[in-house]
Image 1 (tube, helix red, strand yellow):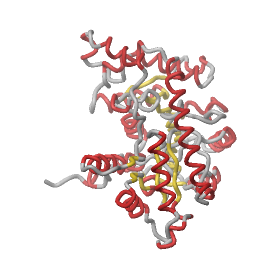
Image 2 (spheres, rainbow, N blue to C red):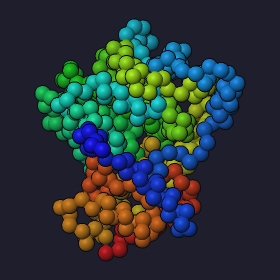
Image 3 (cartoon, rainbow, N blue to C red):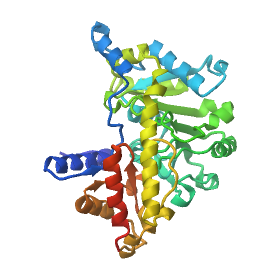
Image 4 (cartoon, rainbow, N blue to C red):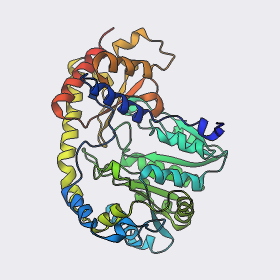
Amino acid sequence: MLLSSRVKGIHDSITMKLNEKAIALTEEGKVIYNLSGGQLPIKPTPEFVEKIHHQLNFLKSYQYSPSAGFPALRKKLLDRFIGTRHLPADLFDVDWDVILSNGSKHSLYDALGALVDPGDEVILLAPYWVSYPEMIKFWGGTPTVVRSNVFDAFVPAIEDIRKAMTPRTKAIIVNSPNNPSGVHYSEAWMREFAGFLRDHPDLVVISDEVYSDITYFDPRPTYFYQHDPGLLPRTVVVQAISKTLAATGLRLGWVIAPASLVGAMSRIQGQTTSGPNSLIQRALLDFDFHFIESFLTPVKTHIRQNAATLREKFREANLGHCWYQSTSAFYFMLDFSRTPMFQRFDPELDHSYAITDELLEGEGITVVPGTDFGIPNTARISLVIEEVPFQEAVSKIVRYLNHT
C-alpha cells in the first residue's frame, strides 16, 4: 500500500520504544534499571480516584461531551489559571476560552494545526520535547532549533533566539519547567524574553506548562506574561493532569488561549477525535484542586532526594563538571561529551544512540538518547524510581562514564 509522504516522514517516539524494550528485557529475567520513564510510578491522589469512582454511576459520564469539553470545567480551569498565575481577572472577561483534549500532546497538535501553514517556521529551544518537531513537520511547518548546553544548565540565550528569527517565523514553543533538562527558566530570563516578544509583535508563543506544579527548588517558575500581561493575546498555554495528578493514561489536557484560536482548535477536534473523555472531565469538575499540593509534597521530596544522590555520586566520581542543579519536573540531562568514556568516540559525530545502547546492554540501564531532544551526545535520566535502585543505577552510570 502506498503511504502518504506526510506519514512517511514521521519518526517513532523514542521514549515509547525504549520503555517497550525495557519491559521486554525485564520479562526475560534481566535486571533493568529503567531511567527512561516520563511518568510518576504512583496512583493519583485518592480524592481524585474517588471522584472517578463516583462518576461511574451516571449515564452522562459515558456519553459525548461537547467538542471543546464541558463548559463548567473549562471555566473552572480558566479560573484556576488566573488564580495560580496571579493575573487580573478582568483581563479574561471576554475573548478567552479553554479547550480540553485527549492529553496535552493532542492539545499541542491541534494548536499547531490551527496556527501553522506550510512553510511557516516554529522556533524550538533545545533541549525540547521529542514530539514538537514531528508535529510541526506534520502540519507542513519547519522547526528552527536554538540550542543550549550544560554550561548554562540548558537554558537558551535570548540573543540566540533573536538571531533565529526570520520573516517566516510564526511561533515559538517555550517549555518551562523543561522536559528533558529538569530546569525552569528564571524570572530574569522570563523578563528578558518578554522584552524580546515586545520587539516581535506578530510572534505567537506556545507556553507548555505541563510540569508547572512539579518544582522542588525555590524560586518557583514564573512566566513572561506575568511580567507583561499585554503578551497574553498571542499566548497559548498548554496544561494537563498527566504529571500533576500522575494520570498519564487518563489522557486529559487543555489549552488556555484567545477564543479565536480555541474555536479553530475545536473545529479540528470536532472532525477528528470529538470531545475528550467524559468520565475524567466530570471527575475533575468535582475535584478540589487544593489536594494537589499535599499530593505532590512527598513526590517532590523524593525527586529532590534522587537529584541529591545524582549530585553526590557525580562528585565522588570526579564528574562534578558534568553536573548542574535540576530544579523541576523529574529529569536530568547527562552530557557524555565531557566524560572519560567519550575519548573513544569521534567528537564531531553524535553517538547518543550507541552510548545509550551500551548502557542498556552492558549495565542494564535505560536512558533516553539526547538526539531526539535536539542535543547530541547526551541522554535524559528520569528521577522517579525508588531511592535504593536509583542509587544503584547511578553508581553503574558513573562507573561506565569513567571507563576509558
